[in-house]
Length: 103
View 1 (tube, helix red, strand yellow):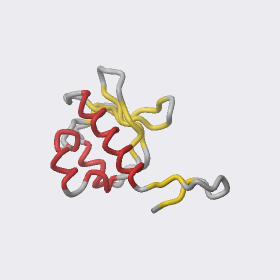
View 2 (cartoon, rainbow, N blue to C red):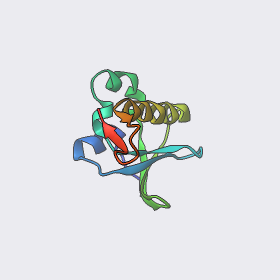
View 3 (tube, rainbow, N blue to C red):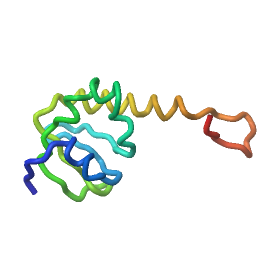
View 4 (cartoon, helix red, strand yellow):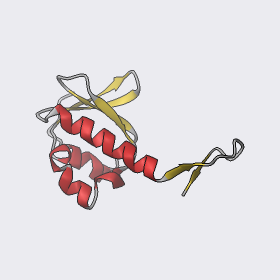
């Protein structure tokens, strides 16, 4: 399915959790939190927000949003930034019964 959308357009529509993939390189990430692309991150990842959406398709992990005309490293960088943000919000409690707790 070919579209004229940019990733930014899908955020305005309220995209569900989806797997973002590159159209030519085997790289991607599962997108779960649009708030990670606001404020300073909106500037840092402007290229990602402006990436053209080549299509939306069913994939091995559910819905895939296929991005094109973007440096694949941007996807990798965003995935790492998202993982760092999630990890910073969690702390591992030493108590086995407590598990992972939000700080």
